[in-house]
Image (cartoon, rainbow, N blue to C red; front, side, top):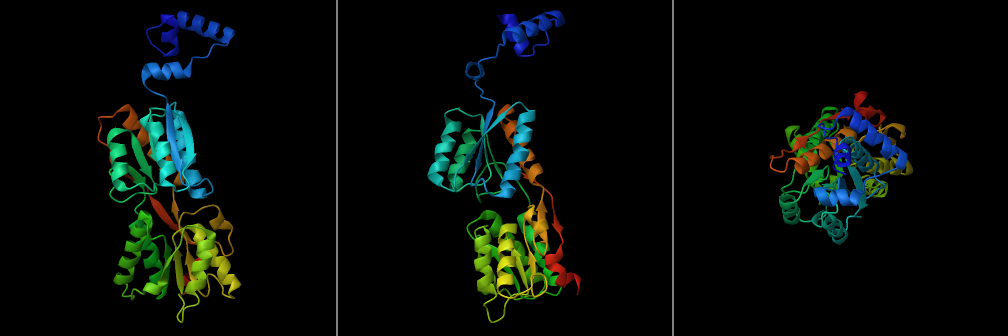
Length: 319
């Protein structure tokens, strides 16, 4: 029994002939180790809990795919759960970590307070990816949202746009950072900050369409719209057509995320491209480091991004 155990655990001390004999018999009898028993003995499940607010968002699906690939390469399985942005449901899933049903937890967003997230991270392996919660003390992987928004707004302003609107979710940390970048660029370019050009959205096509109707019903409608997600930008483009306007000509439209839809919209959408797969991979690798080296201090990781210019900003290209 001890020899079989050493073979199954890749003990280098086992002689080659012995290893081959054991593996041959294992194959003949169709033996499979009891995963539950092994996890109890080793105090490890080799499973990671991945929490998503929704399974319908293409951006987060790509992040999850990158995380899953990284986990699989290291011999871990993913348990994916959807919270629907419900804090009580999220707490129920976190109990899986507390009860040691999983080895660690990867948040892609959270509606729990910063203090609660900090407490979880202080006692258990946890990492936040993409949807950061301000003040939460747990390792984070994401982009510099403020700088990305600054570069988009500056690009629009340098292209001659003076009435630049922005659609964001005011309670969302990345959106608040993007607002900071937006304001910084406006101030730098000497453009007045008009509250009516700041409109709320919830990352959906419908909210983008509603925001568009409100913006283009103003006495002085915007000449550029910066949407905090490509889905909201798609809603803007659709509603502009319904209002008899020409996206890209009457007003520039800029999105965020570079999902597949951005390339096939008419006009194709200028957007901020984040490396979604890399973000998920880095976040998972960071989490596994916390699990396997709990005493090591963990740092936040910043992922690169780039601005993609397409037809929805052609009025700037033509200037």
